[in-house]
Length: 179
Image (cartoon, rainbow, N blue to C red; front, side, top):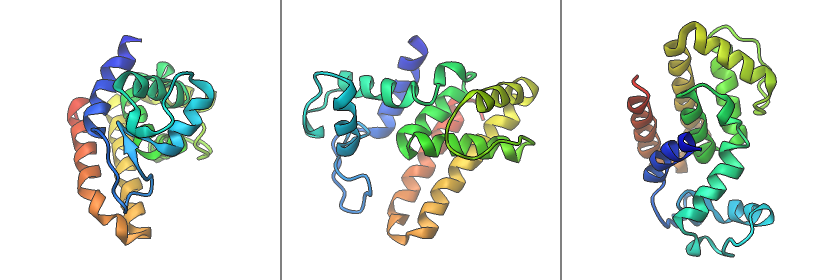
């Protein structure tokens, strides 16, 4: 549990507070939680507010853990891959984080189906790659995150205004894991 809180503090710094940018595809967001995510979370986590505006840090952390950390099986990923995948899940969705990890694994010699689901095969391949060459894996995961965001902008030029922030986030994470 300590590991979750350590990395969640870093993610919270990236996310900040209440944001309602009309160009943000996620819509109104507070502490990295969109209204749609909050609606999903309210089904499984009691006591959450109806609107993101009323979300506090403790509630955001419960959402982070249940819908992102646990969903991506971060407890089963080696450190610091767990952090990179978790941050990607918050920023790109759990499926996006899973696809980034699977593509990274395939770029360094894996043979995973890129479906976004972090299951036993992805976990085993990630651990093996980490044990073999952790730096190569961390670089591949980071590069896939960069590709992900560049692809968003390539498909939708209105998202260009977010690219600098996304790249800074990725670079900050790279520094945090020692790249």
